[in-house]
Image (cartoon, rainbow, N blue to C red; front, side, top):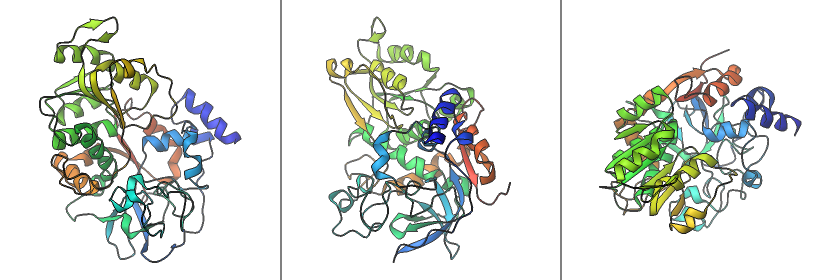
Amino acid sequence: MPRYAAARLAGSLSPGAGGRVGPLRLVDQDEPALPGDGWHRVRPLLAGICGSDLSTVDGHSSRYFEEIVSFPFTPGHEVVGLLDDDTRVVLEPVLGCSARSLKPLCPSCASGQTGDCQHVAFGALAPGLQTGYCADTGGGWGAVLVAHESQLHRVPAHMSDEAAVMIEPAACAVHAALAAAGGSDLSGATVVVLGAGTLGLCTLAALRTFALPGTVIVGAKHREQRELARSLGATVVADPDEVIRAVRRATRSMAVGERLTGGADVVLDCVGSADSLGSALTLVRPRGRIVLVGMPGRVSVDLTPLWHREIALVGTYAYGSEPATAVAAGGRRTFSLAMDLVTEADLGRLVSARYPLERFADAIAHAANAGRRGAVKVVFDLRLRG
């Protein structure tokens, strides 16, 4: 607990600083045991550092997760690695009923929505909503993890490791883009994406591929982010403070004080902060939709506009099988759609820096300040040393 408190304090002062003073440690330990039939050893090649990892390391993750994770865990759920026979795979990290040897499957898993599994704290494994948060499985930030066959997807031979490690965040983005579309397309709609880090840029690419919006306005703070957003199909790219003006022009809304009379049809919040959610409530039109893509944690926000303007607030977590009614999805697995997206949009180019595990504190600090330092996705390369 003292280390956790130190991480929370340090992370508040300097994002990523919790990696130097918090509970995270590099240790030598036995590899995790195979829990049963259908399980495989995976040797990670590349493992990403994502926003939820950074929130955990800096002591800002929500206490909501306390009962559905187990300690000590090895972080890392964005993984491309090798099986014992050198088959290259990517990990779908959610630990659903099949991985937990539970029968019958819960209603969510039975319908293919493994991201909504109702049994993440039960069955043959220690609690853990995903690999990377479960004491029994290991994680991508380690030399070996174990994964159930239901979690593994073969990587096509033409795909680079950098592209493959982007499949998991791209899958989250595909799921969010289809949720934004609500089972149809967004032709003619004005859509706002708040945030242009990994998740925001992947969400922009997914919107352009699967939801077909008319106008996409992206709020991006840094020059490299703005350039990437334009290359991925943004109609307008604006500094976060200028997004409201861009929306006002695009929708021909009037201003009432600091809010708009109209607004965007859909706003996707890829940041997950109190400020970004407050901005989303300001930017969306009456009876519009806000999609939470970034993990919000505990925030304090005035929800009066949600009530007054009858706004729909939608959460999107993980992946599964997308509904057959979704445009361009046709009932396919989210990871399958994400593989196509990564290739078509060349999302492997978002991998900006690699680090060996021994430099974990430097890697975490880089990831936490990626935008300011001209980077997007920072990964561990398990083939590098010191």
